[in-house]
Amino acid sequence: EYPARYDLDTSRQERWIRGDWQIARWLLPRVPGGATKRLRNPLSALSRWKVFDNLRRSLAPAALLLLLMQGWFLAFQAWSWTLAVLGVFLVPPILVAGVALFQRRDEMSLGRHLGAVFGTTRQGLLQAGFRIACLPYEAIVSLRAILRTAARVLITRRRLLEWGAYDLQPSAATGLRAEFQTMWPAPVLAGIAAAGLAVLRPDALPAAAPVLLTGLAAPA
Image (cartoon, rainbow, N blue to C red; front, side, top):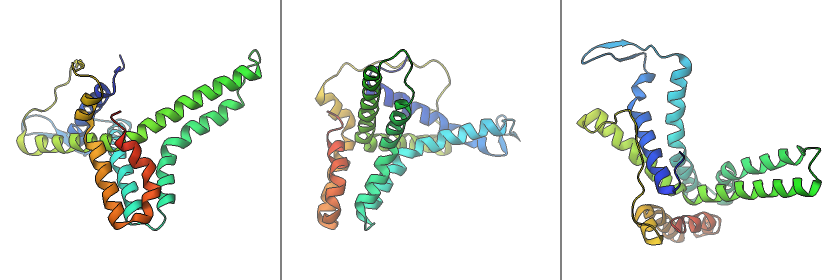
């Protein structure tokens, strides 16, 4: 079943990212075939593309966060950079709403149709806002998983993942304090970015403020 809590979802995502990077070598022409053997890669081009696409997806949160930081600290048009990154999250539900407006069923009244479209759009925008708020935390989780896997595959060769059933058990702690203990990197990173902008780029602070405030509030 799909995880019922955000901490369980990120835990599962982190494990998946570790698994994806653990098999990254299967993108190469020759792959491990035993203790010392190297064999011709038997995976099809489509299968290799799926492996690559998973690696790309795991880098997306960090890439978007880096794009925001670059726009705030280095670029001249901080608002444009901020809106461009936010558009990655906000444009899809808006496009879905635009298409849904013209897909009313004959048996549904116009009022009910508009109400359904509004409800779906509202939910999509709320989910987009939640993803924006959690972007710093998810970037840190992804990079942590990638670096941990690289160290274990290339250096220690210990505690590698084994494929099998994996049940996520919720922790006993709940509430705002528990969420802050788990997600503290997000507000800390937002606070550091806000302090840096106040000193180095105060003109970019108004453009960054909405994103930084959601990052500070992410655990809540």
